[in-house]
Image: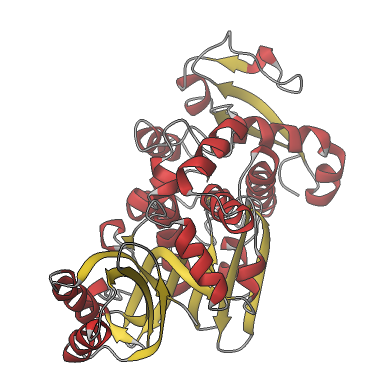
Length: 429
């Protein structure tokens, strides 16, 4: 029944590549029993041969020439862990032209170029799996494609970036500001020297695009996914959230909005009673709702060498089984719908607003009038006395349209008694 040895080639041997090789090495016998064949790492392409490697990486397998992996006719599966768009895309297309099945943990590549890559796999009868591209070791792509495939998924929301979750957790538990905690995260290795992808929301947006296209079976142009990061979240906002019964998380939200999709990444107030509020430090979690299954939550380590390596190794095993049973290309084409993405200005949600104003009569009424003029209804308001004749006001609104909220804030900023609109954060109840 099929091949007894499945050969795998790697492009890249950084954290994820090395973690995957370790999982395959440490659990080799169990893996062989589970799929009925040996998975053998045959070649590993790296940028530098003299770089230090973990002891489980066989240096005799290393090469600096990607062609040694891509063009080797004995390699059945190519695992891409180099990241980025180029040359990764060209390498994968060339590998598929040579009949290789693909496993990738490259979220940026899948989010931006998946619509070009997956059809190539389908046309050639190849598998293309990417569980490791979203939420590290948490299984979510495969469950959406198999276990939950009979459901109409109408909403996914979650914490999909461990760096920002670590920062917000520290800010909440220790009362510290963003910049100080970011420096600690960089020192601990949780944040990159250049943390832009994480703290500005790019990373979460890539993952949301992949999740939404999988859950809703529709192509998601990454340029239409709204995202913002956590740089503007202050200790004062964290404190206000706690007083009001919320915690602040960077949420990735995908939901059906009529015949459209609503896709957004941004900081959000999450009720303390919601399961996502208790997801702390570098952990990730995804909460989804299907029409048949109801609410389901996935929780675990969303990044790291071994958690992500676990996901990549699982994909390799899945493809190995398919090769042995001659049943490849099972899930290469999933985007059969063409759902438009609702513009952010048309999204409706609740809002938290924190502002600093002159502490004198009629200021609250003036701000409330502007909100009312723009169809923004007030749920609650809290005024705190500060110094120098100024006061801090915190507002919570009822659901309002984003366009109206932005227009109201623009007018409020120009009121004579308003010194600053410090922040606006969406509230997800």
